Length: 171
Image (cartoon, rainbow, N blue to C red; front, top):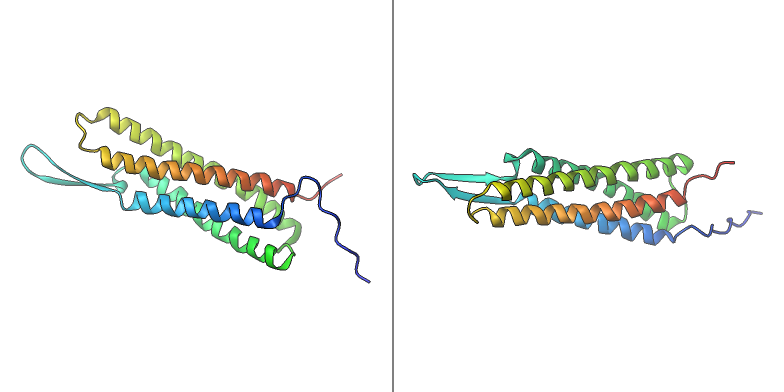
């Protein structure tokens, strides 16, 4: 006869809550990616020459894109694992995956917050350098993308806390 599963620990959360947090992380990162990747601005100099400014003209915005893409890939993988856990009730990979969840969530959340911080800093520097308001739409869109990345960080940090509850107990 099979033994009943052990009662949940007082610090555990329902599996679907972790899944919802991962989905919200993915959505924030996806919108952030769309905003920063489509962010362009065209300016004209004193001679009438046209210059098109894109996100990839700035290292900080390229770093934001890289962190968002890495965060999305990791979150998508973890979402698949969470769906498996919610639907079957069994954790894929056992103790090893619990450690991967915990350390992966920590790494990704820190990566996301550095991408957001670099973008906020770059945007503020560009705002201080401009003489008029010609770049405001471009810079505000970059700030919106960084803000969504920051919100994605908050959800990833929550996932990190939730995954700590699933770590194997060691005596």
